[in-house]
Length: 279
Image (cartoon, rainbow, N blue to C red; front, side):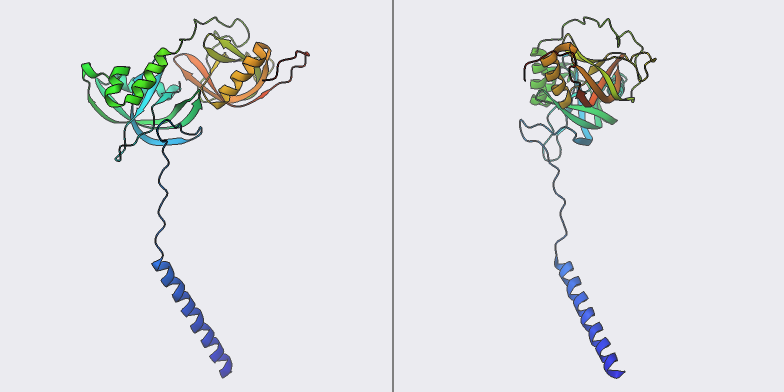
């Protein structure tokens, strides 16, 4: 028995020595350092789908839209200004500004989208971080006022003003008319068949019918800027209003109108034999 005890004791001593050596190496090993958060450089856009959390900034009125101008961090860096997507949360931010006689600084969380060389921000949460007295001569609700704090914001606002404004609405006298009662924000439509219709400077999704064949059709919904909208534009340009698509997306509401953020779509095959030129 004694030789067996000696072997066990020798093995235990060797195991303890190995554990001690490993612990000493771990103690000498430097602690891992978290990778710095990636931020876009000059002229770069954030990737679609990125989330921004608790970013301080201000709302500035642009030509037909609101722009979020980010405050710089401790190192003087800030994301480029982004156009705000229309939704109930944006309206709540506007109401917070209307209740104040001062410039409001928000702390905003939201998702980033990309369309036509610009970043767009869909706010999902916000809080009022600070307020400061408004100086009439340097109002930040105009391009000139934005220049005083962020020249990039002034450039974006002037670019928006220089672009052709959407034509007057032509109206859509068909199923999915805008006269239909608006849908509440937060609804998700799934595999809804319809068409992409150009109405002035906007693209709208007009459904062929409601979720069930006996339901009243949804109102026509303005398609929100994102990468999918760019692809839908290609479909509309190539096939015109006869192009049928099956669409899924998230519904938003802003100032009495419905907006659709397309998350997925499939272009239906033209079964009537109409030929279209290749893109």
